Amino acid sequence: MSDCRLYLISPPRPSAANFLGPLKEALGGGDVASFQLRLKDVSDDEIRRAADILRPVVQAAGAAFILNDRPDLAAELGCDGVHVGQEDAPYAEARRLMGKDRIVGVTCHDSRHLGMEAAEVGADYVAFGAFFPTNTKDPKTKADIELLRWWAEMMVVPCVAIGGITVANAPALVEAGADFLAVSAGVWDHPEGPEAAVRAFNALF
Image (cartoon, rainbow, N blue to C red; front, side, top):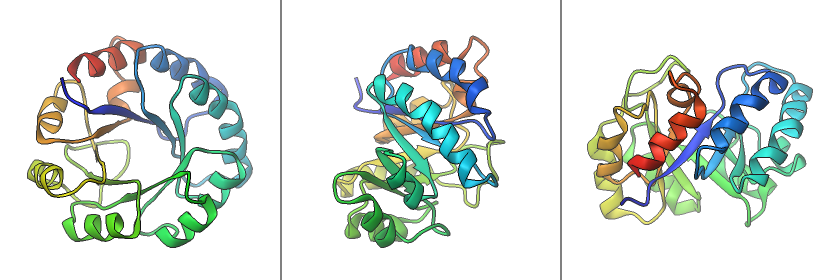
């Protein structure tokens, strides 16, 4: 039994109203630690609308609602946390906006150095990837599973593995010591549906 948990990421460009059904299905499949709303190239108002529709459902299921990129909106909209990339708001600004009690996670690509820097300043988790090919977004780096093993042995800050993760290829990441698996298409495009996918991941953990 591992301590690994599932970190859901929204599909690219979901329409919040149409996505509510699949999201509820996924959350009905068992333990989900968190859900990240990732909306690129949309207006602030679209992000606000989507968050207002989806956040109550996620929080009611006991999962943390994380907004990608935008600590200003995450703070305004009552999100549980924010996830920032290396090109997004700096960690210090995200932490200032979110306060000390909410989650701030940081993308660290395939870099031990970036991971250690983020852990040092107080990030709640670091995300490494991409571990496998993915169509969800264009990954900037390819990470090696050894990185997870090293991190698990050396550091206490939790790490999230991301990038092309499916039920089939997840066991190696769990075994290497990932604390969370960030999954998008591996859940939303699962042949038996999102609920079956979440059940399968939880069975694996």
